[in-house]
Image 1 (spheres, rainbow, N blue to C red):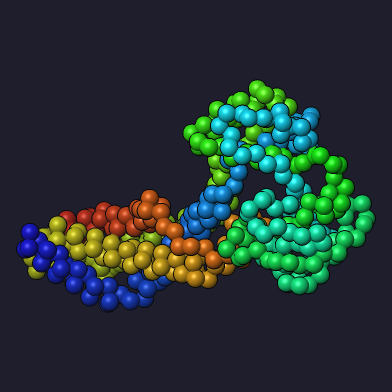
Image 2 (image 1 turned 120 degrees about the vertical axis):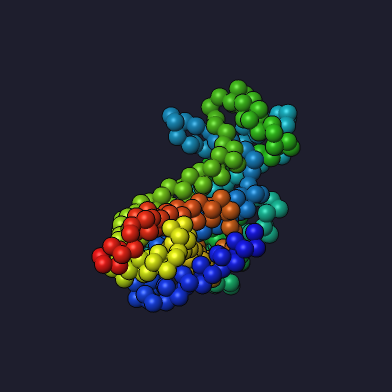
Length: 381
């Protein structure tokens, strides 16, 4: 075993000296190779971090959201539905919620106006608002500033900015405006004793499906939305956007594949002469193949390390400036949040397999053809 290891060390040492004699070719290949790995890894790292961030942000979301449906559309739900839900077995807590959408013609941004649930954030007093970090940036307002909004009925409302939500939650609170219940009903001209939906907390997470089925029987004109379904929707959106970017990059990947295949399969006259000399001085065919395999493996593995490291810094150090506008999905408000480093071992292994192994293996066939040829004919060309 020790002899085999020493032999591989000598082969790697000879391979490195051989690569050093062809600097321009190796550097050009390494540069393009690294760029392709960087682009693919950046997209994968960023979307995986977004999925993880969304899962953490939705960890405290309601287990079940009940919405009233009229003609297939979401409609207001009366407070009497709380009584109709009653003491449904498995439901630990029920709360009627108020929220709606507002388009600001000045900033051209859509926002979500909401009355905060009890215990989630400090209660918002009458005449005051709490803004998401991106929404505050869009309005150009800060703490103790004044926010002026015009309702859909044409009335003008003036609010004092009482707080700004933390940037860490900007993925789900970027467009959020929190107001009191009285201000919400006045701003949207909401009818009394009516709400947007009802949020339920279920004691046993294993009973979510059963609770949803019971709600469907007890309240046939409603639909129950589970938190897992919301999370799957986020994951589907991020996966869809990731696929779009990867499709756009497929042209570059195909061009690289052609370039790498040409470099791997097209031996130059100098390389053929080198193989002929090695065969003439006593190298076995297996030694030549192993030496060239190490050459391809070293180039591809180095490119993978450089590209993946650059992608990691791009995503988690520089906030993924190249892909953030596409993958986050906001049209006007772009959340600014620091993503926590998150690596998926399966994702890394998949990228490694499809970027390192093809090039390393593609070098074997042309090297084998040159290695089994008579050394004299190889050196003569």
